[in-house]
Length: 85
Image (cartoon, rainbow, N blue to C red; front, side):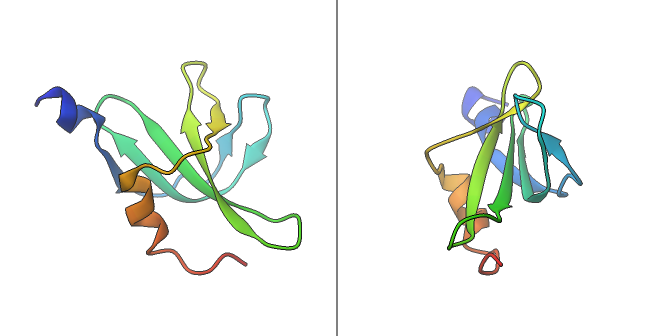
């Protein structure tokens, strides 16, 4: 397996809960994982006038951090999800 194959994220079974870096819990609606241990969660933000999806990337500490970008594999999963409620 080369470096590029290890870094590719693929959708996997969705985790029931995840924890942010500051200790808050959230409920993912989709989970992606890479062969090198990377993990990304997609959740729905329930506050504000418009509900929207948020991407979280697992940090070395084990907690998740919101990320301000969408990578190709996450986009491919996002387009399959229903409109957030």
